[in-house]
Image (cartoon, rainbow, N blue to C red; front, side, top):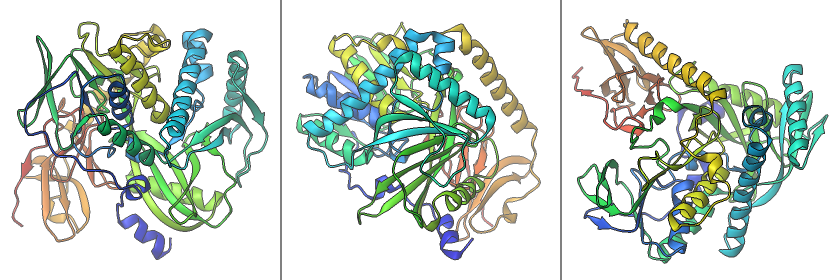
Amino acid sequence: MDSQHHNAFSETPEPYWRESTKLPLFKKLDQNVKVDVTVVGGGIAGITTAYLLAKGGKKVALIDADQLLNGTTGHTTAKISAQHGLIYEELIQHFGEEFAKKYYLSQTKAMQFIQDTITNEHIECHFSEQDAYVYATTDHYAGKVQKEYEAYQKLGINGAIMENIPLDLPIKNALVMKNQAQFHPLKYLKALIDSYTGMGGQIFEGTKAKTINEGDSTQVVTEDGYHLDSEYVVISSHFPFYDGMGFYYTKMHAERSYILGVKAKKDYPGGMYISADDPTRSLRYEEDENGEKLILIGGDKHKTGQGKDTMEHYKALQAFAEEVVGVEEVRYRWSAQDLITLDKVPYIGKLTEKHPGIFVATGFNKWGMTSGTLAGQILSDQILGNHHIYADVYSPSRFVADPSIKHFFKENLNVAGELIKGKLHIPARKPEDLNKGEGDVVNLNGRRCGGFRDESGKLHIVDTTCTHLGCETEWNHGDHTWDCPCHGSRFSIDGEVIEGPAKKPLEKFELND
């Protein structure tokens, strides 16, 4: 690997989307607020919901624990597509043709909403129609692609089987879904933010929701002790910060995936591509500020906190990029965290039947551009008293025996295994053994701890026990975070919560060496 590429791996730059967009900044909540609706979470689902509610005449406050669009939405590949891998054959098998058709039509409706909003709001966000391809490189997956095509035919989806795709990649077959799209998600959502605040919508950043009190109103209490009183609360904070006995952490698991933004040697033909096989490989392009094509290579997914050294994932993607498009320069690298539900269909609707004023949007299964938009449509309709034709498909209270029960036990056996495995592992390394820029599980006076030595030589020591349900976190070398293998919580080198469901930071130790 040459020095240019090595340098790209030694830093952790912001995702291209965030670096190329100047987003407005908003103050922390510093007083109690009373509104019609409180929206928690400033990603595509929360912003779309808040925007539509404000358009519907509601007084809305949106809060985010960090900055807007710094979670999954800011780290996406931003494909606007109803082609969600090989999902339609699976949905037909588990739920029947009518359900699968509703899923497709609802995702297409979300895609149309994005396009209409771009037109109506005159948004410059590099929107372009692209064909989407899912391709197979093995005979086994070629058969699955063929079955997916047969599902397309049953559901009336505009698709075709291809023997070749316009990439330098040997394939067995591919399935194209015509007239899908791509865009710059943050330029699009910045316009929605501007429109929302122009309608009087309030936004508070750096405002972490701690819990919900239910009484005459539904009260969101922040970590700083302020509260937002409203009739309705929408939880779109990636992992629900308030569970309400919905047991969401048992019905989803977290996956990490990786993205490189490269300047390619070969000409990129257009189109959006994803492999049916594992390890997943995804490609699309984005036109950067200089009018040059930035090729986004994604994939190498794995359960958060489980698997090999995370730097190996970036190296694998670079090797793939070299083979398919040729790499002149690696300009960006970043990773994303997604929540996967038991049946691969998002949870959008009432948190539970016992909480009629609290709504949730989560588990977008890596397809957040359409599912997050759809969440905004469904939840705003439900709060405004409008019927949404596809709401039942995404109801969080659904529980279908096949495949949910099988996956439920599989997920929770996996959690139990990780819990036990972490507790049995006593590390041999001591904190003083760590080199600059290195993190690892270490033995501090017989106790399992997490250590990281920064470039100045300072040691950062934390207790590795996740504050959610007690699993042991593992070091993420690629992103310099402590990741929980059980439910996907992530913590900084100093133990601060980056992603839930954990709410409390890891215990921190001061060590003078």
